[in-house]
Length: 287
Image (cartoon, rainbow, N blue to C red; front, side, top):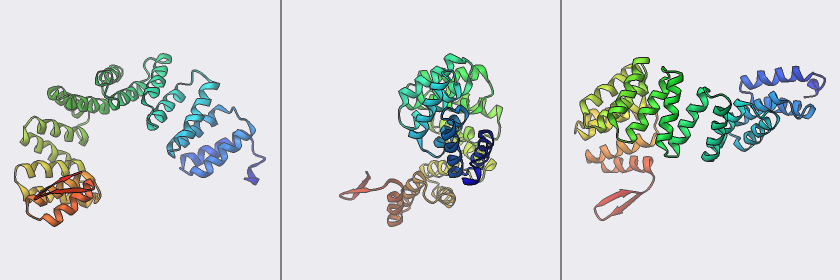
């Protein structure tokens, strides 16, 4: 840092930003700290230092920095929004809501805040509020694919399958190659008992993205239920090749192996996927 001590704040800030953008976290932190030694209220530095801290998962530090930004500038909407996200990560969902709402109070059509509110309300189980937040996003930006998908997931959880399907189909109309929308559409049809439709959508997702693990896993599960065990085994093994430690896949594959009377290997994968197994007489249950 000695060679930088005679640089101006503007020059140090430029260096800090370059390192931040290159994800050189330690160097960027040092440079941001250097600026704050010279000017403790340099608001751009405080804000970006908070952003860097959040990216590094130093959420308590990020919280302090964003709070300082707001103290300096009570109308700094990005600081309110980022603070809301940090509080969500810290498990302070109710407090997060208040900061996203503050953003909207200052700027009513700020899409990111409406979206973040939808995410938090869903995590709180407040589905109607989440739906309202997502619908506000769609009013502002009708072609927001991710919001259509998120809305569909809420409706699916509420077992309002027709509404869920409508949301996923809207997402696919906007982005025909969106594998999340195709996969989720398959899930909705599967839960409605329309298994062949579900299989078709899972297969479409894989055609678009041959490395899309969720669809392989879902195909393995549904084909196992249909007693097409050889096909199911192939899809689970493909999923495991892509991610050997994916818990849901390990559990599904383990149950399929039990169905094939490969008990030792099946129990091995169930343990890997779900942790412990309790034996009760001739049967067992996952705990």
